[in-house]
Image (cartoon, rainbow, N blue to C red; front, side):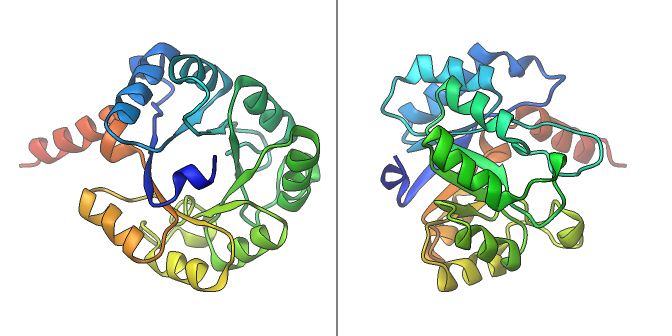
Length: 226
């Protein structure tokens, strides 16, 4: 499944918690449309969305699954616990995406421990979502199968940065031996092409393609300016 992603576009089909688009069947329809137009994989949040999309697409399209959970005492929210990863795997995800930043995690485990458990107990490859070079290096050393720039600009350590993380991607591609994914801030086909040219194994695009809620809000704010 990882090989199928090489050089391609992965479409993240997600919607805000209060959006009518969050219905599992609507998410699955967006994913199906993306695949019909050439996407090589889909990234999804929650077991319900993974299950609905897997049923719609069949077994041949790689699904990167995650489960966003806001938990007390930790800012880690992308598949923070093993139980979350297990639920995503049971729903039919091929690859489990986790927060692999260096921040403290719920229940006191580490990203390395979570990666190992997913490999050993679930038999699934792991995509490590990182924010810094130090986190990327640690995730690769812990055995992550893919490392993505997903959280660059979205954590305390990178809050002054704006995605995409071109510098981080360059470091990862140059210094890691695992496939490196460019995700976050890719807002145009030209930017996606630039990511591939910089050595990205694949590119994940979400808001620019499927983020109707955020796109409409951005347009409306611009129009409303006096």
